[in-house]
Structure formats: C-alpha cells, structure tokens
Image (cartoon, rainbow, N blue to C red; front, top):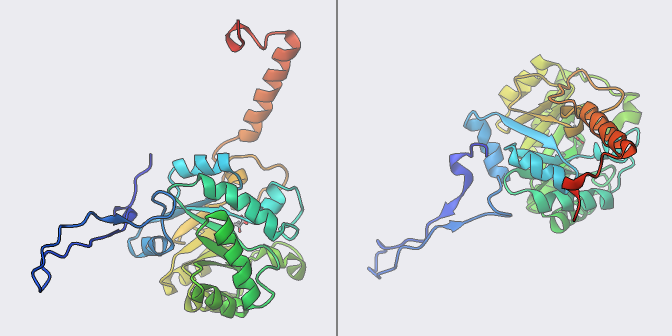
Length: 298
Ligand code: KIV
C-alpha cells in the first residue's frame, strides 16, 4: 500500500481537562473526520502544493478500475467526461449526459477509500445559470458519494465557480485546451495565449477553486501559472513543472486504439495483453484444452 500523508486523518480533540471551571472531563478520543474511510479531502489536496508533494491523478469510470487505481496510491481519481470517448465510443466529450456521468461516478464513489474523487460536469450542465449549475453539481455529490466537481472554465465561468463554492461544493477548474469547446476551436490544439491562460487560471483561483487542470499548454506558460497560483496545477500535456499530473487511465495502460496524443506515456501494453489472453483462451477452447480438470467440478 502506498505511503500516506501525515495529515491523512484529521482529528478533532475534545479534551478539556484544563477548562477554567475545573470540571473533570475525561480526555475524549479523537474523532475521525472522514467521508468513505479516510479519503483525501479537497483542502488536503490543495495543501499538497505547500508541502511540496507532487500529485498524481488518473481517470476511472467503474468500480473495478477505481479500486485498482485507488489501491495503487494516487492522490486523485477523476470520473472524466473523457468517458464519452473511451467508454462510450463517441468522437468527442460532448455527448455524455449528466445522468450517465452520475451513473459511473456512483460506481467509482462506491470503490474509492483513499483518493479524492472528482467528477466532470458534462457539457452544458454548468452553462445554464449558476442555480442550475448548483442543482446539477449537487446531484453529482448527493448521488455518487464523490467529493468535488471539475468544470472546464475560463474567466467567463468564474461566477459559476464562486456560486458552487458558496454552496459547499469543491471545484477543480480546467483551463487551457477545453475539449468541450472543440467545435469553437475547430480541433484539439495546443493553447498558447499566455495572457488569456493566466487570467483564466487566476479567475478560477479567486473564485475559490481548490485546484486547476492545465491541458495542452506550453511548458513555460504552465510553469509561470504554477508559480503565480497558491492552488495546485494538475497538468496534462503541460510539462513537468505543474504541481501534479493527470492521465486518462486507458492511455496510461496502453488500451487506447488509434490516435494517442504526444503527451501520453503508456506504462503498460494492456491492449496487447488482452489480445494475447483472449487469443490463447480461444485457441484452448477450440483445442478442447479448456476447461481442464483443474477448472471444473468432479
Ligand atoms: O475528461 C477527462 O478525462 C479530463 C482529463 C483529460 C483532465 O478532463
């Protein structure tokens, strides 16, 4: 099991033996303040930056994968709207619905014990006014046991972020390449407008975001944004100077077919492993080698 931060378990001491009226109060046991088990909280996640602790995040979309990546010790798990592409097979993140995000977030929420769990607000669930955004983000938190939402945001979404935060909903912002705006951008491109990117990131921080994803921006711009912000920057295609990194789990495991972005490093070849395992199984079935004695009942 991976190393855990010292601040993993927040405790509140109710001990009051030195109270002025000299009442004898037994020292109380510390109260564990936790969601499911001892998950990292949004404030702890933010504090990792000040502690100089690099943050790892990956996506997960179902119970089995969420358990595996959580056990591997990542600090954050994102139920990303990338699900629209890697799970549902669409060609963008636009089609996935709020109900579908919640359905998958619920599976992930049921699995995770240690990491902070963040859920993407799908398009256009946070563009319908701040009250509707609170209602939609509120559904995510109520129905999925996840702890925070992420929204693709620039200066224009600062008010929405502030409204969500005022409702007690932790918000992770997402600047740089915002895949939900692909039709406006005309494609998935590296974003290089430093002034705009800096304003977007600062607006998110000022609005109360606890962290911010920086997607597909040049390393030197990500470095300057990271230096300017007190909240952690989580990069994807934004270089090594961010406070943390996030990858789509299918990319990390080598499961993605077709185009793989330049910033992806596959740490395994599960596509190859799956092909080999299923071909072996098929061969053994055809040859009458499976099931053998060992894998049946007498
Ligand atoms: O949806 C997603 O997986 C994301 C990450 C790529 C940051 O937003």
